[in-house]
Image 1 (cartoon, one colour):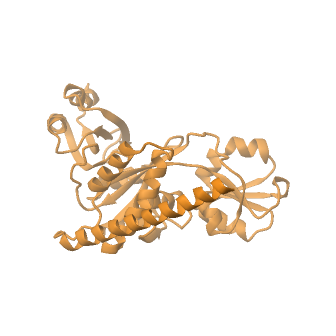
Image 2: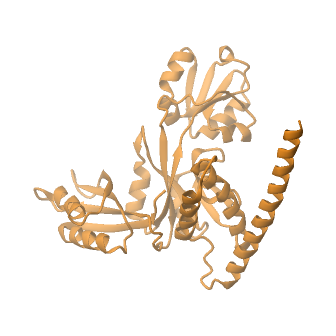
Length: 352
């Protein structure tokens, strides 16, 4: 007991020091806000550099992800001393899009949930929100086509990415699996938990909803009902997480993009996204990817989509490592553009 008391006293002393340091940090952040001339509150490249330094310095026992989570909250609250950001995302509250938004911006922001990906884009374009968060691809379900189509047609820029491990949980007010008669969830979530449902609740009715949060809302008020949703949704709708991590693919991950109206400066560890259309000739695709290999620029993604201009004509979404302003990237892009019928810069942003 004597040792336990000493350790608790040590924690109390450390907590006071942490509080003093956080307060000092907040005062510095507030002063920077007064000194800045551009009025920009959020600088993705600067925050990326802060996280990278912290992760480099981290000696444990907390994981790098834990360090990022702790400092995300600190940075979010310090940033709000200058001005609260408004961030739009695919709602309602309790969705994975909201979870991704919190992971990127912290909780001290003004949340603006929407009913569609189109509305997220429109909110940023109309300046109703400074930033938007949209899903772009899932490791099991593939690309989110609507996001890709809107990236092609809008003038918004990608200013960041969020990689979110997706864990599905069975939420209910029922006392056991035997009491469950219906499951509500988004169609993708039902598909991602298909085998678990088949093995554990083979005779239960499944109902697709507009979102997992909507499924949780229904399950809250219906006897014998359950929802598949996040832990955050269980807290919002006061449902018990009866079974955790019921997804069939344990490495299920969704990548989200952060949208804004401006280009980012270099952070030193960046990614660039472009969309390109090929000329209709043999070897056209090789012409698109060859310059990156030639100039030693790593290509991390190649995704094709119908151009919607002509039958069997496609555009290609390409992610490469490096910033648009990097010399190697510039040389590669110039060469690709000379061989393409169309090229659009979607944004350069810090790698997650």
